[in-house]
Every structure is written in C-alpha cells, then in structure tokens.
Image 1 (cartoon, rainbow, N blue to C red):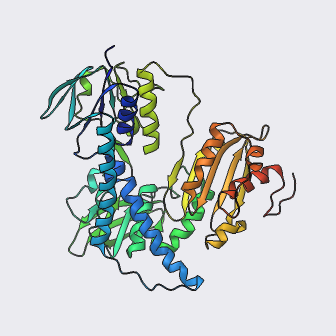
Image 2 (spheres, rainbow, N blue to C red):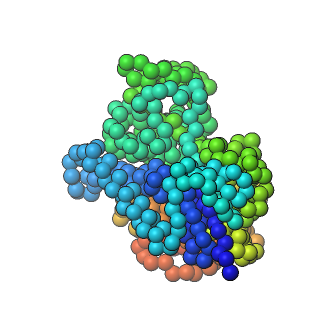
Image 3 (cartoon, helix red, strand yellow):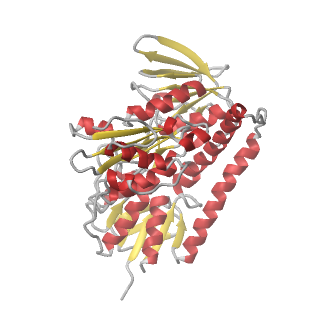
Length: 465
C-alpha cells in the first residue's frame, strides 16, 4: 500500500510536531521551512529565548530578595555578551535536537520558501516542485508594527529584536501591556533599565481575570519606572537624544524621550505570498485561514494549524492541532471533548489559567462559585518569601465540577497542568480536595482552594456555607 505523502509548511512547534507524529504513523513526510534551523518563532525568536532571559531576570531578583534573609551577594555584574551567548547556546542545543529527531524519523527536511501551485503541489526555490496528498500550513505569525511607527531605527524594537539584548537601554518604553511586553519589560528591568509601559485599555493583560492581574501589577509598579493605563502612543520621532514620543491619556498629553522603544501590540498571520489564492483556501478579513474543528480548510487536501488560524497563539495549542490534523488525514478522528488549553504569562509573579475564567462567566451570565486560597496562608510560599500569590477555582455550584483554574504567583506555570487535567477529566472540587498533596508545596494550594468549596479549609478560617 502506497504511503500517504504529507507536506508540512513551517517547522515551528505545530509543524514539526505534526511532521514527527505523521512519520511515526507511517506517512511519507516532507517538512519545508523557510529558515535553515527548525523550531520556528517559539524556539528561535520567542518562547525559549525569552524564558532563558526571564530565568536570568528571576535569578537577579532573587539575589536582591535574599538580602532580607541574611544573604548579600552584592550587586550583580552583567556581561551582556556572555548572556547573549548563553541564550544562543540554549537555542542551538534545542535546534540540534530537533534536527536529530527529524533524521531519526526519516522526515525529508527542505530549507526554502514553499509556494502553492495548486491543491497538490508546491514549488520550493532551489528545490523545484513537490507533490503531496495532504499538506499542513503552519507558517506562524509575526509582530505587528503600525505603519506610523515603523521608522528605520535601531532604537525601535519588536519582540524579535528585543531578544537580541544588544545593550541595556537606560530608559525603555514598552508599548502594549500584553504578555510579550510585560515579559520583556521584566527582563530589561532586572538587567537595569528603567521601564515604562503604556497600555491603551484600563488594565494590563486584557482578558485575564482582574484579581490575578492586580497581584502582578502591584509587583510591576515597584519594578518598573511607570505604568500608564488608558494611554496611547500618539507620535514618535527620532532625535539625537533618543526616541521622542507623545503620550496621550484621558487627562493629559505629555512628551518623553526614551533610549529604546519596544512595540508589542500583537501579531499577524504569515499567510501572504504562499500561493493560497491558487487553491480554495479561504482567509478571514484579518488574514487568518478558515478551518473546521479538525483543521481542514475549504480545500480538502489542505489543513492549517497554529497562529495562522487565529485563536490563542500558543505553541502547545499548535502542537495539539498538528497531531489532530494528522489523525484526520488518517481517518482516525474521534469525537473528543474540546481541549482545555492552558495559558501562562511568565512574568514575576507568573499568571496561569485554564478553562472558564471568572470574567467569561460574568460575561455569559453564568452562575459559578469562586474559591480563592491566598498564598499568605501557604507554608511553602512563606519559605520562599513569596506570599504574593493566589490560587482560585471556578466551580459549578450544583455539581461541584471544576470549570476553571487560575493562579498567580511564583512557578504558577508549573502548577496549572493539574487544573488542565482536572477539567479535562471532569473532576470535582471534592475529587481535588480528597487527593493528597505533598506538604509543604505550592501544589497543595489547589487542594486547599478545593477545601474552601467543601467548607473546611485547613489553613484559613472560613465560615461554613
């Protein structure tokens, strides 16, 4: 029986996960990637380098916090060149690992830009034409920089150039209070920059539950020079002293000068110049590819996953979608529950959530019970000197079923997976409360939040309902 030929366009976490899974399932796989190295934005210019730098930032901050505990390491001496080399070493090591996995699985890796000629053939510059039975478009996204502010200046950064850490600017303006801007602001503030954030809405991290954001915002107001909400960047001009900006809020307009500016207001899909117009693939008005629940486009031989289809632009979501698309091609799709997709903001403290949020429940008029356990009552958080966290469960009142989980605090991103599993398996607050958690750990804050629903939390006093 002839193997099904699969072409995957894009070698990010969605593309390579799909390619590897398809090869494991016996398909004849070709992986085409415009970059020489695999990993996509996540590995090369996003998740991995930013988390490498955020770890360094956390270490710097911990040395400062340690003074309260009787340890004084002095002020850190920062070698920017060595820091950049360490980041690049991490990327290089993981890139080599992916290349090795690609060879071990027999995936044909082609470096170049693929352009669709029709629904079953692409042309790759320098490699000619490639035919396929099915293809997956996983070309990712790129930062949005408004035309009015797209000046040619090394002082103007996007999420990619900010990760290069060319230097430590004395004054940095971050435009956009989303997770990318706040994560990079956290890095530069720890390294020594005076960071100012401007956000056009009335709060940081729009869409995230406000009680979680308030904890982070209180910490960032200490770490950053300033946070301006309900404020717009109106004008940008390059001068000898730096980048001169005009900032406008509801109450005032003012001008300031910054050494560098990071524009982080969102991302847009890489769907142009792929030849998709030669197929029946449909795009929405923002350029995202329209797909069904299995990732299939209007052209039945073509699938799309990850950032190019919109929704949450998360690496783990793309990987999940890639594997499900392969199963659909193999006619193995099953009626599965909607996946529970976690999200993590890797600031300090971290914010993580999954399932139904309190904000979503309010917007939908859905009655829920919110159970919050403050980390001020956590023994482990106290030993870490980090009582600024909170764990909360969103529970269905009638059944006790866990609908959502939210966390803010150090290592929140490592804790959220228990919430994902609980929601995916339909667990109740009683199930979680009766699952013995090790003491003293941060994980037991989930158990104690569940005990609040039952009316008998151990480490806080709460009258029974």
